[in-house]
Image (cartoon, rainbow, N blue to C red):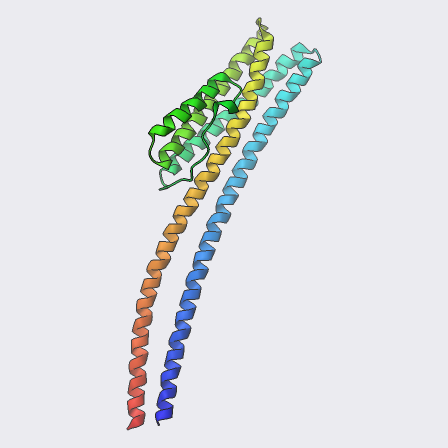
Length: 258
């Protein structure tokens, strides 16, 4: 009878051990699946957005390169006509970037911390006014405390940069179209602004990547907290089950010992 009682006890303990191992394994699996899902989703958003914007910017760059090639061949009239077409591409591109930056600023308020991103530098831009905006960004960021505030200032400066670039392109395009004096200077302005638009686009993509990482990190922390709370509930249930099984085993053992 004593041997049989010990068999019941060992069986109950084995059941409890199996339940504990499976609960820990499920928790780890949930954590890995959740983090993997977030990273995959963020990479999908980043990849699709970056691909679309890079395609639009590449189209604008190729159009302007064609305009310059036509001008260099001496076809001034054709170059002026193509210049209008090239500006129309930028005219559609800049508002899209401004909408993206505004959306990023709104989402950044949902993130408790964003990884620091390299500040804009005036040396990275060929247009003096846009370079001055970058210098302003470097100056003002020292007066901001949180990473979110610095991130939103960064986005604001980028947005102002796109606005200035679009305005400079429009002014230079109109002056060339009217065949005003100083055409060479206006052509150089267009060349510099197009290069700066590429820089602004690249830095906007860096900002989007940092924001998505911040969102991932925060949601992963929230998921971890939820898993921990669920684990506490599961542990309480396991303790209750263990107590119940122990009582059952003890009752069976007493019955067998009689």
